[in-house]
Length: 124
Image: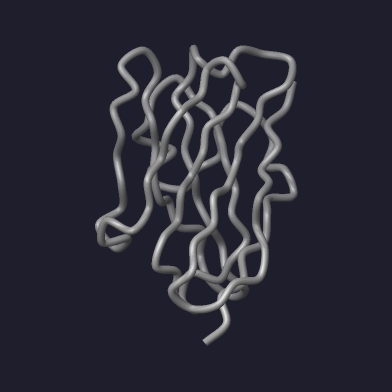
């Protein structure tokens, strides 16, 4: 029972990436799923969450509409589409699942242990 984040990489300012959060051992459709990130020397920052059942989406105001979270239940995966990337977006990105979004939007751990995350590096 785990979540695996993937899709990170090295991109230039203004480019896009799509991160994937894939569940194994349980059905992600029954859970809210959130993305957070942590850069070296900084606190973990909650970014976005998609709620269970209704798929209502929530975003940190700091993202300024550049990121979009979505769910593909058939693939048991939640995505984070990141556009107009900036060097300040460089961090290790993590996903987590919970029964609801509030704690995930604070960057807190969900029901599963933190995985390794996926590294995003944006060059200027």
